[in-house]
Image (tube, rainbow, N blue to C red; front, side, top):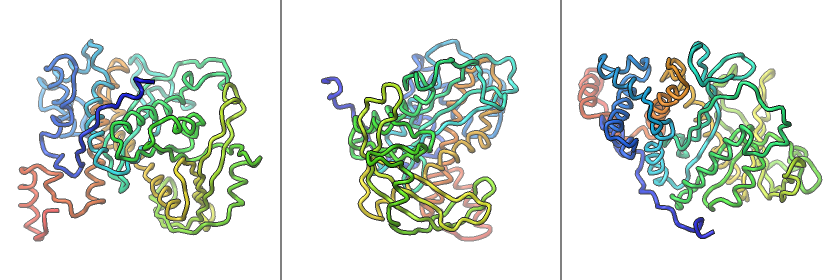
Length: 424
């Protein structure tokens, strides 16, 4: 108890709008790296800088010649156990915490995606990707976002290969720590550590339906007071009033209707849609399985968002959101809906990682080497998306925030040929 009462070191705030895209950015982002050898630290910084200069290039094509490329491959294939994806991401995580500390509210979407390396038949350490028959790795990440959709960095990333054959034991007989779904709770624990270090910021854990685990809802009561959940419900849970979640919310009077903009998704075009919003306090009962039978009921708030006039043949928008944050009026309910919309940002990041950085195009002999290279692409993908989102969220931001003096000189000379516009 005394150890848990110890106050962790606070984080020094640093706004993302400070100049962070100049040439020396990689040195600042990796300044806290400690691999046990300064030469390895410098090599990691050089690899990150090379990947940023040409993110769409192959790993070999990122470097100016054979000599730096050979040094980079030597780093990735180094036998030292100190070089891991977690160790390479640690300084970026610390820089992300500094950017988070500058915000009053930080949204933390987490999600899982697959990395397909089926073509690497001789690479060791890969596993099945599901029913498709492919082979590769799984990546579960938690990103940090501002409320305007600007990403602040990668707070957590875990990469693993599934075993060839799963245990025959029934899923409900396993504890949460034995299940792959433990990754959701593990990320929430790391978010709690971050919340204790930045007590003046409210941290909101965002998950889609796969993250609707009773353990996540239960943990919030034990975590720091500035950590909260906003989870899309998957299970039609039993309530203490002897009703099911969806049935109960269907009886709640309509609170209001709102218009919400949706991005293009699958076969549906980007559009503004009208949704009905209902909210209510609820108390969910623990699942009647395993040890959870004795767990206490939890008091939460539910927000039901449902599209009222979906076009024929189009699946309507329907979100049942569960949160520990009290909802007392329409504005508070809609605020949480807008926060949940930021969960799409992690899917955009996945697309940048795979399409913009070509993370699935790497060719190495082991999964461990693939993970080391992936660490650099995770940071680069965040940076690409941050530059895009800053331009949208803060169009009047000085161009010097995103460009070095040399880049500005070239761009400004070209710009003068067409129009005399301010350097935003």
